[in-house]
Image (cartoon, rainbow, N blue to C red; front, side, top):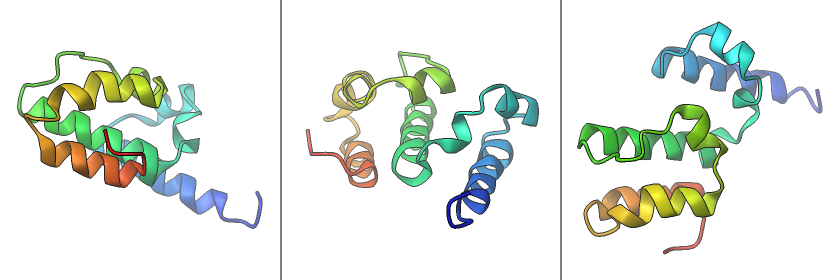
Length: 104
């Protein structure tokens, strides 16, 4: 571990996946890339978008966690942000600010 920082960060991400999203330890063990993704600028903003869309029954893509986290930024913007730019501008702006990408 470089500088000893990787360990605690991974546990924060694992805790989020298990306690907030209710994924099992077995699921995370079978998908070891999940805890290594950038949590604050990648994972959490995408999960928040999905949560908002699912709450409002707007999510027409129905992709699973791995699908959503595995897609490119341009594809995520095309499928989950741009179609809702006028319907949920608050969600779009929040995502764009947290993910630190250019405005659409």
